[in-house]
Length: 547
Image (cartoon, rainbow, N blue to C red):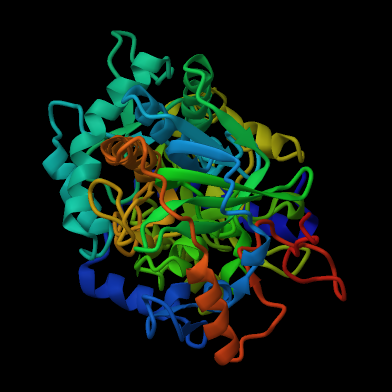
């Protein structure tokens, strides 16, 4: 057994309660109890973790200190170093980001006839899309409809979602599944060829379409193949460090830092799409994260400095089930599909304490309460706490071999450390997973800055204050495609001879305000990459002097 001796008595208690729990019914929490749980234990409600912004379009709004430090910072690029008079590239549509949102936007923009360039600071597919596991929602069964899906989205988001965005998300969903299947995505199917669908937390219908437990990887595989087949121009290892505007405040491209040779490049574009992802690598409130290495909120910083309005920047999603043991993979995701196919959450005594498919914010809060207030968490050798996911129960409920068939990635993740989840439970605790808020967009993906579009996790308003499982893979494709269409139409409507003067005056003004407000001189953003160096070397990623 891979678990140390002090943890084994708790496993024995879990094994002893398994038979009685198989028939136990736990109801959904009523709204008043749910709100009390959130206010008492969800990290968003913890005092002292947020502050009001002192400048910008959201001045006076609260956001976590980790994000505020990026908004209240000097520019990472000296505006004087960028050669705006002689751009390195001149395109119709510039797409910044190489995940699912960016690639889908680039594909449809190019198909519409636009001259497209996709740039990404890492490699194409180095994104949270690839790491998404559980599935993608779409109401395409006879007992379901986009209207029912829409109501689930609103309920999951605390009825705070932007209605037009939630409607676009849910009503485009069936067409997205058809598009993916046409590209070659291998969804799980029944013997008769119909789609297999399962429940997710907060859903009233089984509408989760899956590819085992590596759905995002399969979707990204096909998107990347399509991008290569369509010969979309791509530049990797180039990070956007500033947007460029024209004298009227319209976005006209970006300044890039070539991370391989440390040189600045300028792209002039008639329309720009930000698809830079979330902020998991900021480790808000010290939480571990399930996010990929480049998730450092770059797009939010660039758009905010350019004058874009943000939405719901005071809410972060903490996925209920991140790995709590072994230490080597703490924070990595345990997909919600593990609970969807039957695993139960139990405390140190082997008792359930929440319905496993409550909304994510509610489930995460219940786990935190169990560990912090009730002292019923399982202690790890490092002194951290978690609760059990009773994965052997899946094999009892669904039959031997179910885990290796439906959850192969999860099985490999744990067997590599000697934990056989078909025979032993796995330990879990919430991990920073998703950026609920972001840059405010309309249903075409356009921001409050003309010429600037956003898709994917960098966008805000779609999910309200909490996202349901399976709506992020849907989100990136719905709004990636919508932004690609709108950006290409806008770009193609601009005259061929139109070459506006590029300006970084907004960045200079932002620096002047930062100086006036007394922000630390060494605080610069975007940080581009997280810094895990130990003290005294720890600090934000710093740029070398650009040549």
